[in-house]
Amino acid sequence: MNETGKNKNMATMLSLLRMEMDHEREEFRRFTENVGIGRSVKRGDCWFPVRVGKSYYNSLNQFVVELYRNEEEESEHNFEYGKPVMFFRRSGINDIEYFNFGGTVSYVDGNRMVAVVRDATCVASIESCAEAGVQLSFDETTYKLMIEAVNKVMNAKGNRLAYLRDIFYNKSSVQKLAFMPMSFPWLNKSQEKAVNEVLWAKDVRIIHGPPGTGKTTTLVEAIYETLRRENQVLVCAQSNMAVDWISEQLMDRGIDVLRIGNPTRVNDKMLGQTYERRYEAHPDYPQLWKMRKTLNEIKGSRKSTESYHQKVDRLKNRITELELRIHNDLFAQARVISCTLASSASRILEGYKFDTLFIDEAAQALEAACWIAIKKAKRVIFAGDHQQLPPTIKCYEALKGGLGITLMQRIAENNSQVVDMLTVQYRMNEEIMEFSNQWFYKGEVQSAPEVKNRSILDMDIPVVWIDTGEIESKEEFVGVTYGRINKGEAQLALSTLQDFFEKVGIDRVKEERLDVGIISPYRAQVHYMRHLIKHSDFFRKFKNSIAVNTVDGFQGQERDIIIISLVRANDAGDIGFLRDLRRMNVAMTRARMKLIILGDVGTLTHHPFYNKLYKYVKELGDFCV
Image (tube, one colour):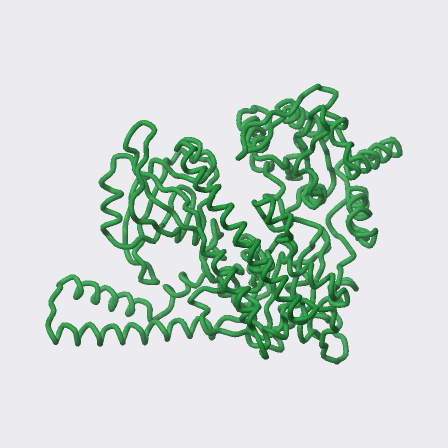
């Protein structure tokens, strides 16, 4: 592709990004105006009422305030590190009034949130209200970072960024080092080849990991071996959850990881690796804290004399010296810097360059987001699976225009020789794997011998489809936000699980700690099934072994038993976004030993994928019987 073609593609990407940003901003405005506090709370976008706790300066010298919601509140929420928030008070039964200041989430744990605000006057305003709340605000930050990154890539000339851009957009060959391959007896042949190819790559490499093939294991090994040749690497992913997961695996290998950004609900191990916590743990931090406190006290005296200004300047200079020393010590110790793609633009990483950037779950990341981190690297290693969850795009026109085409996908299509596919899966009974294998992976994936015939019961059929059309339960539309619900199907899903538990034996289910995932593409169905389980005497004793979530919520996870509720049941054969087959691939391949699909055959089999899947399951049942 010539220079004009590349720039045209990138200009189109910028246009689509702005379209997506405008769409999301308008959706947020409309939602904020039309939805009451109660629904905002249920959606997880609002805490109301909130109680104000302590306020103080944190380790980064930011003024923060603690906010608490009702201790009995158990609903999930969408607040997480780095998200912008706005504060409000209720001025009438249905009226709210927003304050003229906002904040940023610093930390969330259970019913406690720590938010960065401008100063103490903001806290006083919130405290003065009888009924105050905090709500997520529309965040343009990531969009601005992506737009800035794409512009920089478009204008790059004669440097490493321009070189990578040209390779990624052309079918030109990439450069490789030449040395004897290394042996890794604990890896299979496809994993071993992938690690060696990463070590040989001078520009780019892709580790394509279908479900259960040990993509994370392979990636960790590749990072470990790279660190034997380089002092430090940057490891990124689209989401905080993905960054935490790969960071934990690296720590288990004894690698020092510095986590940039406070992830949501991190465990103690990861929290201790965050920049902020390690900053506070530095031996020089108590001295720095005292100096900052002294500076704030001096500023509070408001004395405008020459000696006052000299004292303030000396103190500021000493504080800056200490801050730099602590910062440099943290980076000197760390072998891996881990963060989300957007967080790679953090001021903490300003000026840093890396020989190698690893991007995990790259098939879920917008191309523009990848460029934010690539600006800091000489070579890039992508890991992911473009047959699983795609990037989240809310504007249909932007999706239709091609915004969902990821950089990993683009490179794989232009340079298939840089792709290493992992071909042995260690998760599923072979018959659970096989349909996905044939449809998505051209039959190239094999089952490891130890999982090939795994099952809970002898002579059991590992995959079953229960036709919910036979109970004549139809879908219901419950609003744009939550989508659709099928109550009859939800009830049947749980009764099916109860029957299976009883068939296995309750004592055995408990002793062997069999775990269950119940998946539905629709949030309303998820909420309804959670409600049913919570109020079920039978399932109450299994509450710690049953997880109910959307497909996205189960990405990267696996369970002994998976139940999928497809919801759609209508006379028109309309299946909506069930047409996104990559999500169905994720849902089906979470199961280790038992997969139960519930769906209206009459509705779903109008689509060739579901028609072929139903026939596969039916033939499997006939064969097993």
